[in-house]
Length: 156
Image (cartoon, rainbow, N blue to C red; front, side, top):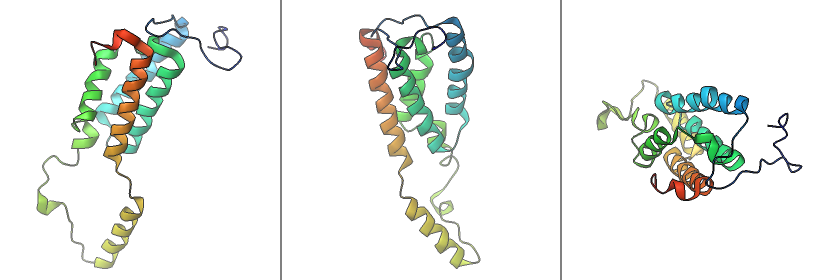
């Protein structure tokens, strides 16, 4: 954006709410052929919830920095994933549950001391990734609504 003179002195791009300000062709091409397809592929294939959390944060930041032009033509797919995250039906949220039975959830190892160490590490982590995904998804919805203005209404 800088070589095209589209960033002001505060390092911000001045976009207008609800109106996709045209991005330079090279920027739009980069976003639509590399960045967004990569992010959407991550939503389809990634098991690690912390990766999903970061992608949602990045998408929110893109929306805040570049406005509605970022997601032009991709909103249907993005909304599909947003709904999956909110319903806890996304790949990363269901991958571990498929085919599992309650008795499969707790593995018993021959060396119970190792199990105790693993449990301690997991308890120290204490992060509810589904809750963080929900929060990041909510933040993305807010950022999209702010960027798109009234044109977000059909998706809402």
